[in-house]
Length: 341
Image (cartoon, rainbow, N blue to C red):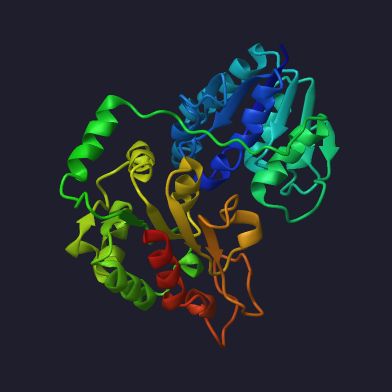
């Protein structure tokens, strides 16, 4: 059995988009190992897509970049990878942060896409161009399997099964829901400012769905203010009360998830249970949007000439962050009501 290493160090959504590649390699007889960070460890640990997981705590290391222990841990990790004697390594990160692991992991074939950046290609000894530029990230990653001659027509997603403790915790958090109504999870927050949908639109959606569904709001501690502003405090507000494992379990109990382009949205899609409405502002639906069932998954975007810019800061001075209002609340409400009937 040949042994392969997949390197994907960030972010949550990007790690999720790499899981189908791991499943394809497993289905074709490879022993699959995965190197990831704090962002992706809960996605691949215990996931049937891979046989072994290596953890690189990059975000911890960055805070202590002059710490000798950090250097020792990094070197030790590289030696641990080398002991595996990989036949192939795939750099799915394609950035400088993956270069040292790719360069020194000891794999006979170290393969990276031509469309890498920051000098990451110097860690590889094989370069392949994707079949078509600007494919969805799932298909872009699967192009590595296609390069090996595999059939990539099937896209298989998988997530780890959650423990009894996690399930009991979610039972408790959702104890007050009305079992006669569907469950809608609203996860309004994301990382980039231009990815955030307009607050007034969120308020309209909440008001329209309040009597039609159990509304459950999710987010991190820093998202509490946003969720309060759009009315989340009147419903089940789990902001700051859940971790990634909890969120995976919550999505398996939802009928609908509404979110911007975010890790939460990608996780909901990966869970395969709820319908999903994703609201895209500055980013590309073709590269990052949910897909696979046109009656269940909806990636919405406006028609502005500047969309998508894929920039963290809006470059449009005259019409700043106009894309955050380009999708109307009415469009989201119509879809949600159709799904929830």
